[in-house]
Length: 230
Image (cartoon, rainbow, N blue to C red; front, side):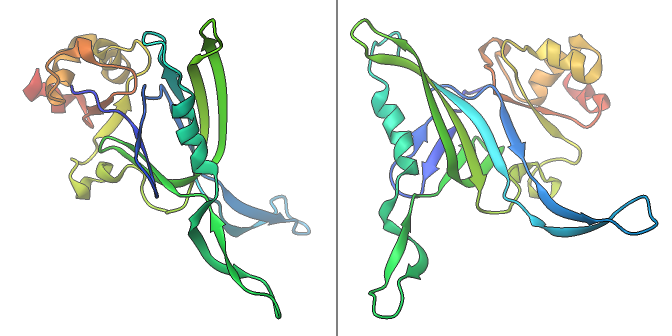
């Protein structure tokens, strides 16, 4: 399977290709509910007060240990996505009578993309950088970037997993964990480690040894769907 890097595509400027794909991604969505105590009842009455924006939490690793290059410029590219861009406006104005009105500028939006399986339109809510390795002269060569992306477009973040948009009914995607192999996936999903060859054929994988953490593995709805690939 061909390695597909995750990308951050900003509203303005060049896309940022991840040096290493994240090992895990957390999606969170919260709805607002209020509960009012009703006299004489055990269960309070619930009222929906509105949905909250979804968030995607992930950690990116940047490492130039072998080349010994400064990774500060790569970090700066990400940090700039949190800065206000004078060319972008919220579409609202501020100022009152007797004052000139001017647009309220904002940081750029961005899209987190990973192959054809994940697309997330968002803004950067939080960015934390942890430098973990330096050269003797203080040059940073390894860092981890913790990102919280807040969704700005309420749509399916896995657009191609809907059976009506190209997938087959009941199929699902499993992302490989660190050092996870296809036989481990076959055991965990179907209780038969020997099915790893069928899973590889099902995904068109010629060399399972080239798989990396984070790679998507398409799994059928039932083990019987692998018969033709065994």
